[in-house]
Length: 482
Image (tube, rainbow, N blue to C red; front, side, top):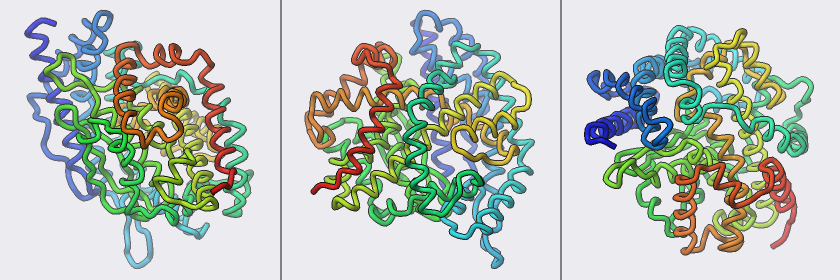
């Protein structure tokens, strides 16, 4: 890389860091995003696009740095305006004038027991969100500009695409039906009459919250990184607010040079525990990033971030982990694992639906709202209103989007988990020798690409492995042994 291009790469990484910090500082719904990054930094986006396209065939890692910087330069202004508008939008929760931020509405619906109240909250949220449609369309238009100017191949490298979605559905159809029938019975729901509010409620899985208190979630879900002596664990910081019935979500960002931060407010519904575990796994990947030269921080392949998400989340499907790290007795362990598995399967299916939807968004498909409802309903048995489509589309390049990368990670996790068990036994998450092995595996993935690494380690079809992963977890959950 020429000195001038290396200098521009440093500038590109500084821009990405500034954008991440802007999101990090917007922790609470009432905070406005700082005036950062600077207008001057954002104005260099076109040059980054030129560098990305010039290096695409010869230096994929550096090309991705420039492509990410170009994406940030295009996306940040409309995204910041949209997020500020969302932060200022609140939904009336009760007649006593209690309100909830729009981003906390899903959590409020999950934790609301009354059917009529849930439906009323969803309707109120739709009305509030509809007022933000112009700002949302500004973000969607920017995303399409990125896709048009970077081209399909480079956009796919940023974690878009829908490869593997059919595989995920085929691997999860049977286990989702079984777990869903169980959970819907608990709530007294009829699957043939399921509303979106009912679906959110079905995912509340409150037993997880009762058995594993929210105050312990970061410790339970993240302690394994220190136990396995992963150096990256020391570069992860958490700025989570206390869990709330109006939680606005949890996300991970890269921070500084090879650091990462997990921030947000998790919901008190059991899904919040899996959100925290997944975000800590993502942060691990950000903290193990390697730059385009030894002296530089870098950007992490989005598919590896997706792997981190699944790896962290699916530890809660491991009976040894739940017993030793959460300290649950056999009957509690069964309940916790079944609920965690239900949420993991459902969230993976939702990611697959949104990966397909994201391709439609960037491809400017017609009847986007109708296709959104169709895609989500196929995966989840119910769907939000068509008006939610444009708001979901704003996430396509966001930290809570890039669903194609999440699918790649979800399909790779079973291979990684078996690789770890083969080398470090069932309790690999407590073995201080595991950290070196994990770091080496991550390095191989960066060098080879995730798909090549997966195929090299296991020649078995990814869909078969994923289906087996969930089937084994279901079997383990129902083994009530001391």
